[in-house]
Image 1 (cartoon, rainbow, N blue to C red):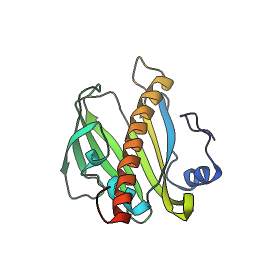
Image 2: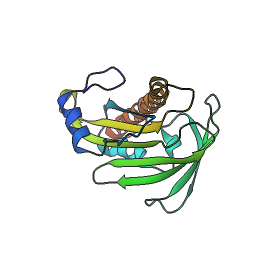
Image 3: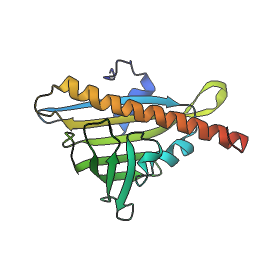
Image 4: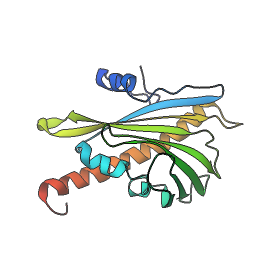
Length: 188
């Protein structure tokens, strides 16, 4: 199995994808992809950022503001404001799954002034050993979305993957900075 981002997945990554919630049922005119990121920070630190459905701007650089309507349970809706430079200004998203034990978050876009119709994503975190026996985190994010009229599946996947890659890079940078603070007891 190869990730659409051109990187070959290793056996552990493939197994997590098979066992976890990263299987999407595609209908005609949809595309889907799975991306992985290895982060040099323990799961509890990475999860402290990912699980914040009410504050995605903590690591998602394209979100400027978030307002939650509900009590952080399944079905809760958030309105996010998107920073300029993207072909949108707002998005309405619903919490589909938040599992603190398995470290899984799933959201669905239910409205907004963008072209990402029927978008659904799942992100899961998995502990892994990294250099020197330290603990790191394997992050897997998958999505499915309708292909907008006038675009191809490849164009649509490329655009969404680029956004997710930016989010995952930011998540890694912030998590790794927090991990350094966690081990030193202060600022990096």
